[in-house]
Image (cartoon, rainbow, N blue to C red; front, side, top):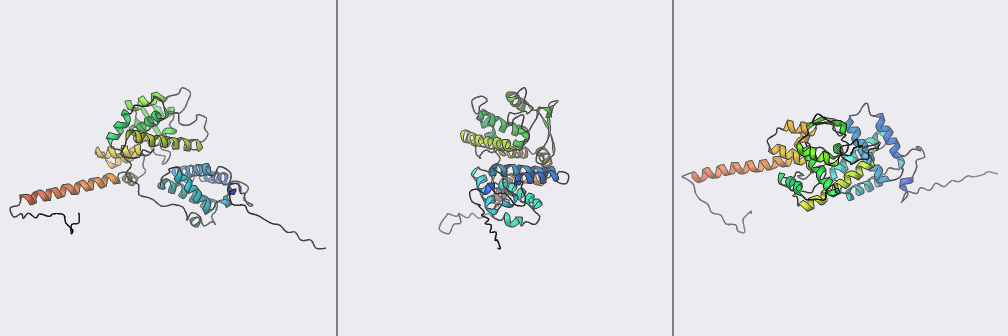
Length: 341
């Protein structure tokens, strides 16, 4: 008698897609991705590895449960993009996360068509609107009367400290340690670029530092748990999201001209320095940029304004000379149906 063995394989890839396991790889995606990043430590720039880790941490927060590498699909990535958008993450940040994940998956699965896999999500670059606050808005934030050490007061002080400290990014404030303060200076390396930054501590900065110091906490500010093993993990993502929510509320209260986010203080310092005629090379070094071209994107809106002002100045000179000319012929024009105005 011949026996037949019939096997049915049912793939449940609906609500339970996060729990799907691969036949070829028992490890979940995050574990394999972490191992891949670790293997690239000696051959990739620190900033690239940090981008990988930040994107992976965010993606893991979205997943919530293990998922096999082979289960990463376009639908999963599109769902992740919607999740980021609902959290208020900017398009350019979403693009940065997606491009990091695309590059990472390409290294994990060289045979995969990663461009097709990521075809339904945003991986481009959106020109950002002007983020800088005028100095008047910075002063308005300083004058706000808020309950001492309340969440809003803490977020306001972090924003001001970022502005005072050459536009220090939130990630660097969160990871700033007391050991990095010595002889009246803060000396640290930017998480994104690895660039060494040295900042002279001004009185306004000292006041904020002293206000939130905890004796047994190695960090300057109580943003991350002192026992956290991964400063850029889920705890950091939660803290940054909370910080941005509080900044949004503060912007409403202070009636600032721009929506407040964690990056606005950085853009505001760069713009204020530019208006003070600080050279582009000095601003670039203060911000820890590896190229002045990066700094120029911060100041593009400022340059546009200067071009407008320059054009207005030129036209006024022409107009004044025309009026002083003896051969001038005055032409009066009233707006009518053929007017372009």
